[in-house]
Image 1 (cartoon, rainbow, N blue to C red):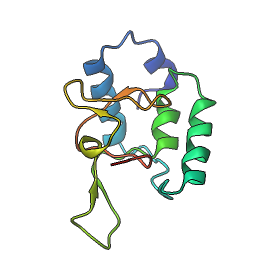
Image 2: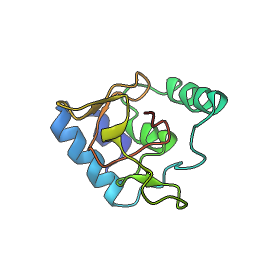
Image 3: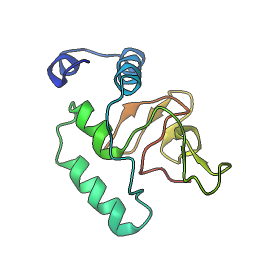
Image 4: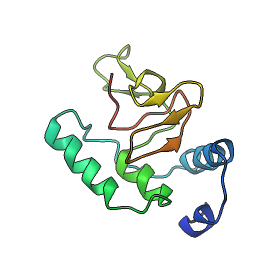
Length: 117
């Protein structure tokens, strides 16, 4: 699996960084998928942890934000899927998360615990 040092050394375009992130997630990076950040306090806790990271600390961003390579479902309602493509921070044409604390290229079907309608 790529290391933080390897990733930081890449002068990555969105596409190459997205592919590297896809590889990291596919290899089973354990991320903090739950608890989901639904309350204001939970959002602030996750965001403050993300703000403490260096912008190029991609692996820890993925871990703290709870990224998954598939849409999140609560289990109770299989039709209630949380995916990047339905998040308010998702830039459709760029396939990019513009949440200031994340700022990463993403895939439409990925998810994180800061997902918002």
